[in-house]
Length: 238
Image 1 (cartoon, helix red, strand yellow):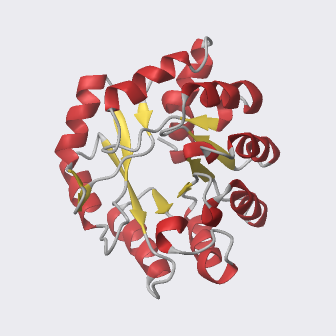
Image 2 (cartoon, helix red, strand yellow):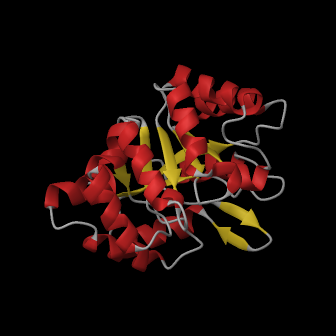
């Protein structure tokens, strides 16, 4: 069983810091093999800390880029990160960036370039206006060949809606970071283990707790294996 954490931040902002070494230390302590990482997206941000952390820990850390769709160079930045540095996915945060996920002019070009490269998109997916579950449904339908991962799976108010959309759209997945175990159990039971992906959102969590809670997600060993690593490994072709 390969265990992979699908949601982590690396870099420095005024209220948080996590280096690649910090993240790997958490993985080692918890018994986690690998982790997806992307930048903090508050304020001005850069993908260079992700590049550097991946160079330091290429077998442990999986790099995603992040962009603000309002920036004219957003598509070019995705291309640069994938082609030059081998990044494996894209992170978007509509609430912080101030845009609707379903905005055609801002987000369609980014989905199109990710479709070209065959890489997934993980999006902040709490129950906020700009990235509520219907926004994901619109994009999952508009880009059926793009793997779309809903971080936080619609928590707090929209988990039931998120689960319904994950069932409806084959390319839409639910990621568990910060979601309570009851809601995760419900997602596994109703949408199936194939549609649920474990993530932590470090450094904003108690890392050990976020991993340990997943032992209660399902009693099925094969299902657990998919949730805590198998699904994201399949998506990333690891």
